Length: 474
Image (cartoon, rainbow, N blue to C red; front, side, top):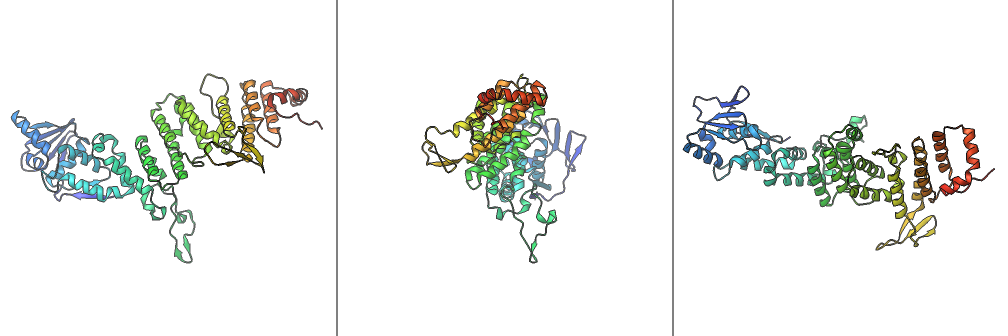
């Protein structure tokens, strides 16, 4: 962490009790500065020589014969004013990423400009910010985190914009130029994992991954995080898949962790709502930039938080485009209504409908060497492998078998989804029959022999419901 020391005199500001600050000197104090319940007993001359605001306030107080000034509205409070006061006295004070912004805003409030005194506090802090803090990755993040309690001062001073641009620029540089010291959340080096990092006696430079910056930014509140990611995206040098990885990490940090418990226990989820809004807004549009499993987790979160239709529709459309990459566990989205069944089957049916819609022939497709050639509007001819439909068919069969274990599952919903998926290409329909078999075992609680008899006698009915061909009798 970068730091800057100002002043040369010993620190003579002392404390008496919890509310009194005074300068230990033989010269009697002649001014009292009140900030909340804290009182500073100081001297006019060093303060007025560097602060225009205090000059005006003292002039007004002299007319009223009052030696006490109340500046409780100073940004940064007593601690920030203490830095400014020590600077006025020439006492040693150390600025770092944790206190520099509060001191800068307080100095602006006190109007410690160059027109009052050359080398004043504002000038020195600005030099420190520009030459050191904004050039350092971690310091820029720390300063950005401190802006929340200093609004609107830091926004007016453009400090937030400077921090965000600094962070965005550093995240976007070539990873070969990044040193591990940039980040405190680095993954272990090969040597730390017991792997030899030497080759032919020469120490190898450890490779820095493209997503080295992802975990550090998870520390930011959602509004600042959103602005940083937008800046990184705008620079155009970050691969969409890395942006997707950053959003996935942030979602687990700020949104998905213990979400179900928070909702069921009535915990205030305002921040989780904001995180979901930001993540959905920031999702890269490029194909493959985020996994289908992650999108389904976001959709599950949107349902639990009862977010607006726009979020859900957006996610459903994207999930439908890459449903072949999902797993059965991803689709097990619980119902958050008064229904007795465990899972939100209607939502899964909507997703499957979206998949079917995006992969439908529309009268334009033709089969050629296991590929369908689909003419899309305003697009060149593109190929859609039938493997994706095979994968979705297998996925839905597995999902049907899983939800069939729910004793409260309505048969019409099971059959509706089974019939919808029956048109997808598959080598056999064994998966559908297994799902029906499971449903009957759970809901009817009958013996296996009876089930086989029931299936044999009603196989034609099952075929009508599922659209599957009747099993061949051996």
